[in-house]
Image 1 (cartoon, rainbow, N blue to C red):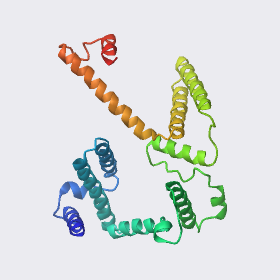
Image 2: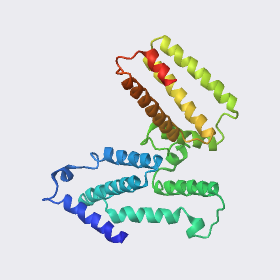
Image 3: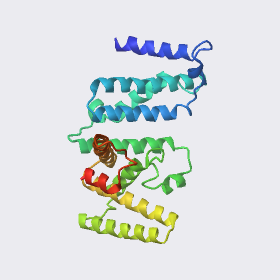
Image 4: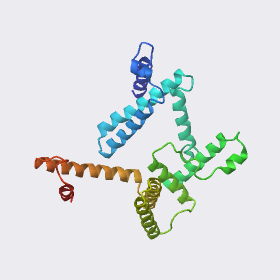
Length: 262
């Protein structure tokens, strides 16, 4: 049944992109579809956090549409097709799970993750095999951390890799002390009315907080999303209480809103 429905999806997408298909679908490019891939991914994450399983099924379908849509565009340009996409992921799953599909063994999730990273590094070295050996020697530990991701996730990955190499603050008190120092430097930058300096210092503080989250075993992206959700709920309550009083946000003073917040 799944195979038949997937084939139907491929046929629908090909029809939409045909000369007599949908004008909007025909105008799309890989570049124009980037925003939709990001949006659909975040909507799927939102459905998971709300435990909306029916909604998640729909959002995963939308992500699947993006995969098929972009694969169809690539096929039309002779770059690759959906068969290549499926072939790559199937091969990768087998290659990176030698404890399941091969003769190796792994008893813990940590061992699996370590071997995954080792195999991933081997693959990248193999792809770079035709390059100058000196280039590979110059590649650093963080070279392969992609910049094509939200800054929060990039900072989290950078922190994890540095920590695995032993480069991290050893005690929680050291992190707290460093955070205090970064906050003081940020305040100094604000006092000097230096926007560039302030941006630099707040960036250092945010990076440090991401590091602290990793040390505590907390995913900073999920933690921030939880904080966003909590703020939305509380701010919504303030708006409702003001409406009950016949007031708007603009009419209410800061003190009254702070009182309602508390």
